[in-house]
Image 1 (cartoon, rainbow, N blue to C red):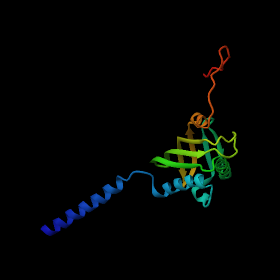
Image 2: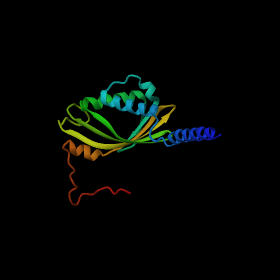
Image 3: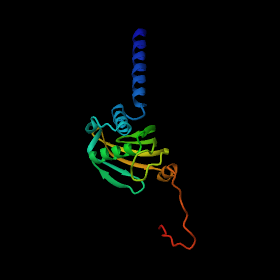
Length: 175
């Protein structure tokens, strides 16, 4: 009888440890973390192998400062390709991820040297800044990204400056 009690107590302890370890698991599930990592690799390499397994066809990206949604994998590919022409050494790295249900909040760092043509003339200067994204998942794929970064800091790192309005100049009031 004493041996049976020890066996039952040992089994109960093993079950408790297994359940406690499973219930306490935090972080992004491996399959979704893999999708996020692949998404960042699209940016870092400009290669889009298996993109349909990572992102939904109607993937939508909404970015600061205007927060106008842009939709589609083809739009995304063009954006990445253009960015990599402007910044040939473009690099995004993940600094932190917080995951909940079907979404992940990501703090990332962007670096790169603006050597190529783009929306503004090449400066040869380097950018290094942080930004944040919230990604949403549907059926294990990234369906949407809301992104915010410090556009002013990036422009200042490229050598642009702010010029305050001259006195007497009418300025539009922001409500």
